[in-house]
Image 1 (cartoon, one colour):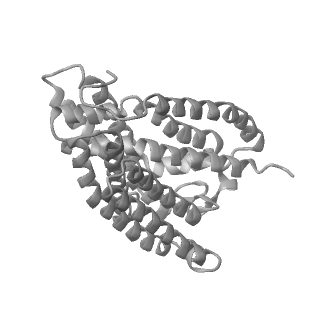
Image 2: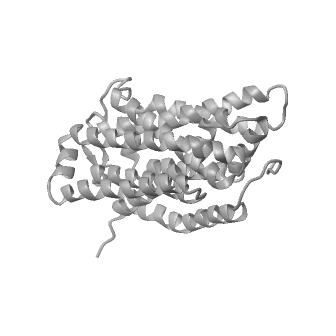
Length: 334
């Protein structure tokens, strides 16, 4: 049986994007919550909690974007013109927070400026990722295998809603990460903050889920005709289980459970988007196979992916293992 290389590569890119979201999401969330971290010492502790891993987390963004360019060139050629503005702003946000990460430790006079850059860069990156997602979900106008929409098509009420939803969800990940990684007053503050963030994230997920099937008849059919209608029951139940784990973990004083539950919400949301999309790569008109490179190119690239992906997974897992445990005030990696 011949391998479906396009499907394999679509799965690999989807996995890379999901890993990026769940890994870089919490450190962007830490940046979004930075002004509420309290004292200077607590802000230092919050930053130190992600300092060993934040740049490695962004490897997955490069893998997803680079993989899209290499193996789905038509999708890249259509999506990029449609989303130039949010993607450019996202990259600028990531640049600012990356520079702030390094520079705020080197100065005293300008530290407040870099604190603002860290917060602003994190917030802009999170918002733009959500806006780009919303613009992709609502569909991209294509004619003659090229983007045929306008400059501002990405900016709609739905894309703004998804931007706010992603930023709120990242803030929840950041809060639960700090609950897991810190102790004392910072942990207690983040535990209190996680309650309203959890409620807001669930509300935003619910609203986006309700609106999505009405964006395109294909989405509606996928969710409300058998067997898809079964998923319309199963997915909300799984979200309720994750919500129960989140709030009971916060209420019982568990340190790790809220973070795992918040990650589960993102995984479930990602699966929901995949159910709506498949087999489209560029909704509503271009499928995985229509935008894929020739099979020889896909096969050649897959050889490199088979070698590199385990290495990236290994060093990522090793970094988290080495820097496991609590981060205490006065301890750091700078």
